[in-house]
Image 1 (tube, rainbow, N blue to C red):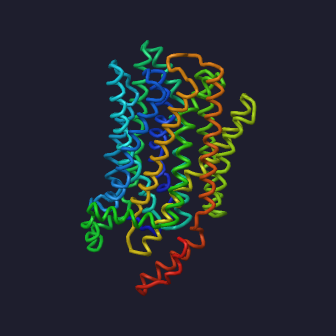
Image 2 (cartoon, helix red, strand yellow):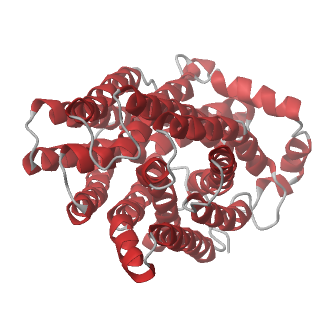
Image 3 (cartoon, rainbow, N blue to C red):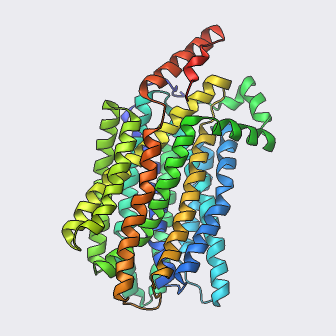
Length: 476
């Protein structure tokens, strides 16, 4: 029995969907938190080259995001539009994670080429799995608040994945190094474990959601006609229509600026803890664990606030708190108290963005549904992903080139006082600046709860009478 989009979601459905996000939390954060550190301190890649490696791979993959999203929107697979992509994509995703942390004994140029290719494979695999999973959330309910619940569960459980990905690698690498006597083997074994965990949780989510994904609308006569016209020209036309959606454009810019920060700060956090705060593996892992736990708690708080206030208010407030969390790194002295204050505010801001962004993109797709009758949830999700990748690429470049400019020496276990100070400022000030732009776009986001209710009423009017009042779309 297929669950309809109008049905209030049961706890089991919310949990089943959210379990998949554990895989996103693992795969996404183990990369951003440790790949650059692995390249520079383990594989011997210069920081500037490490930044270019990640940026090139991300930019290449950005091309595939809207294609995968549009493809999943229009596939005729009888098992649904999203689950088949997730099930196959998660296997590729897991393999790619394992390959990232292999340090091959190759000449420098060939080693750089290896990491570029593996990095490209990682991002392509992430896209084929993550974009359809996020898009699936829009198909499980059309309700404004139910969609927030879906994303609240997803972000809370993604926090568990984040906790695993950032709280355990240093300890796991230390353990395997003691067992095998080789740090290279330790990193490789850790990569295999995180890759396997990513596959397991995504496959489990798909298994638990059997029969919950609505019947593929492309199997109906009307849907088949739309699906059959899915040429590249149609894809570009749909993309042009998407960029005419003012609400989506605001979300895209918010995403771009926030993800510059995500990449930069995630990559630099281990440098900050190691060289500025001089924490050992246990202390750094404790910070990461605290961060992961607080993100889980904060996502529940954010979900509650989103049901009390407007989503745009929660987004704008969350991103503002996110910015302040970095400013405190400079304003407060180097101490455990500063780290705790930073992590608490970081968790609130991080949860505010990740809980709201896709719930808001689901809402924005209702605008196109009213205009054309199409449901471009996958395309909209992938366009968010596209500008996320642009932000990731920019953040990777800033990270690598920033470390290069402040004099970081990849072969040295100690850094100069000027470099240590540079790490602190790079970690704190640059994210705060980019997040300030994200706050501005959040405040300007036009699709409020009332406007969404008007869209829903207009859609109902269109279904019943074949027409609607076009003024409902003004400013959206």
